[in-house]
Image 1: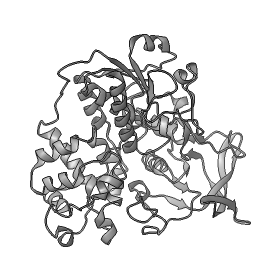
Image 2: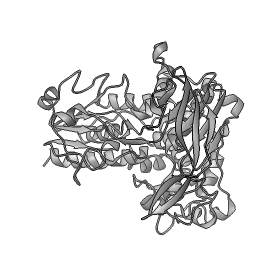
Image 3: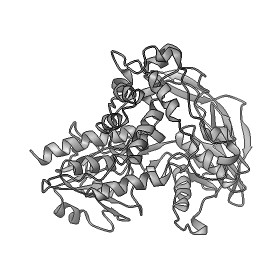
Image 4: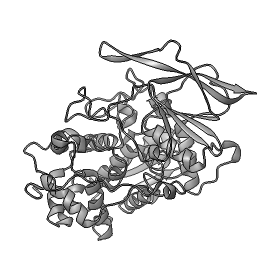
Length: 474
């Protein structure tokens, strides 16, 4: 159980970040890493609880957290590595970008608000595996003769492909982007997830037999008939691509863009792709307003600062959360509380209980944003908002980035051609076995469950792959 009484002897510690004035000059990872001594101390804090809420309630993948914490404390790193990889296909991704619901469910979080540093320990374990030759290509010893097409190379699609390939099926992953990774490569900034981490894993998958066909849109570059005739099963993992818009007066002004369009262009430039000047979106020399207070909005803040924005303001319609866990989200639930990201620390004004009501410009170009304070009320258990009379104010802005989440997968050529049934939210409707209304077609991740965390997309992909395997080998 780690060290008996370790949670009383050692306080929780975070590795922290590189200095602000240094990190805003580049797109390299901002987070530092623990020394081995610090990792040992943090692993010693794990209590090996009788009911490990971190494992059962917190982690969507069901990671064996107390077990590999104990192994790390004892110096049994190879054992910790095998325990970690028994439940997770890509620990190096979640260890960098997951908000760690496991830590929110840690019993130490309930006791003194100092959960075990699970995410940092996870990262150390998988990096130990890579550094010590434990992560090597392991293609399956036998093939089943079944062929599977995965349409979408994001977290869910990669997980489906990895699991099915290891089970012996021949897997081909199609994606419209030039390289695999989906949101991992094109949506999440390098300063949170450097792309060599993605390359390292997809290269490994290719060495194990997964075929990647990138820069290919099924329904345009190749027909659905071509895919259907060559594969025994198809999995749709295209993600939630339809961003939520803000249709207020002035929306047609130049200078208003969706957050993912902005982030994608910078990631492509970091990857060496050439972006045509007329197609680029840059914050350089501009007053930036980010509308939306989630992770995507935070990513826009950090990227804008690195591009040379004059100022960055973030607007969120929800009220300012409390500094500590709200009583409305008791442990072990994911807590409602104020979160300040590394990007916020780099310089950003944040407005809460505020909504933009009009974009204002000159000669077709954005210059200002009229905002209003909002009053949040709960009706039938759901928050509703109304403007506070007389609270209007105007903020200067040359660039607005809409980061208000996604409303569904949007159009999909395969889904439309086969008239695949959708749910009330526009997502691909699936049954308990992840099957769609079309024969031999399955779906997983945000495309089926709606916008969510990377770790939940991976967990959903894992369940889908198991269901597909059962169907393929029935």
